Amino acid sequence: MLGKILKQFASPSALARAGVLSMNRRNRDFIMKYNLRRYYPMVDDKLRTKTLAEQFGVPVAPLIGAIRCQYEVKQFENMIRNRSGGFVIKPGHGSGGRGILVIRRHSGNSFEKNDGTLLDRVQIHRVITDILSGLYSLGGQVDYALLEECIDFSDVFRNYSYQGIPDVRVIVFRGYPVMAMIRLATKQSDGRANLHQGAVGIGLSLRNGVPRMAVQFNQPVSRHPDTGVPLRDLRVPFWKEHLELAARCADMIQLGYFGADIVLDRKRGPLLLELNARPGLAIQIANHAGLAARLERIEQLDPASHPTPEERVAFAREQFA
Ligand SMILES: Nc1ncnc2c1ncn2[C@@H]1O[C@H](COP(=O)(O)OP(=O)(O)O)[C@@H](O)[C@H]1O
Ligand SMILES: [Mg+2]
Image (tube, rainbow, N blue to C red; front, side, top):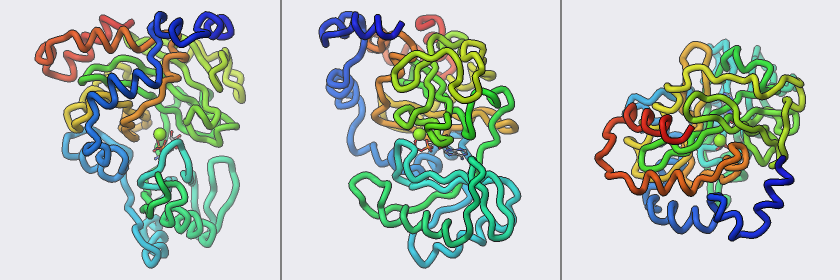
């Protein structure tokens, strides 16, 4: 199917006619126009996003702590000593899943990664030191390491993800959700749900969260490459809540166009994982639909038409099935 789509979309003008938003147009007409640079630090820094979300009552993946300099690295043990569950160490300014370590269990000097590999204390210290040195941050500037509780992802996704938590990406424009997909970790993506690492992306109907089309490396797939389950059977519970959480994020940051990444925790429900001021365009392939017409539809609206996140979600579910 995708081969056909790509052939049909062979030239930039054909793509534009089909309503596919190009990188140039995304940057010029949406990111530059609606996202002022001075507001980027709010979303490019994961701790700032978390703090802001807490102020606005948006639930987030629970914070354990932050390590900001080399002499604090040893404090890592104190931070997790009395915690029985798993935890995640990530660069505060990271992106694309780089530098993220997910530890699902630990006991004494033994830390078990998602794939079963065991690490000791010294190896964990090295991971943190690499993060601090800026190995994974934009432009290699010094960074801090963020420790977060490992999300206990809902049972409904168990066979849909390989050793990692799936996340729902919602594109939000002027406070309205406009397109969504779920990303599933695979063996190739090493337990992370980032598409260019090899995760599977499934476009989801905004109306009810039902799958539209699934892709891996921009090629269509019908089953999870590792577990073999048919992807069209996947259902996202608390769909409306996912969309409302995404729409509510627009009230806490001054960005007109962004992507909200949401994970479903077994006990806590949908939680905000991170926000992205330059969300990728592959979501259009996973949805077999272009973003352009949807964004134009929202641009035509009077900004006061739907003041609450609930109203904006109801409108979007009606408009963008
Ligand atoms: N708290 C967590 N619990 C479990 N997995 C996580 C957690 N945080 C991140 N991950 C995994 O790592 C991936 C990338 O994390 P994210 O915070 O979105 O960073 P990035 O900006 O690098 O994409 C997520 O999609 C998820 O698969
Ligand atoms: Mg991410």
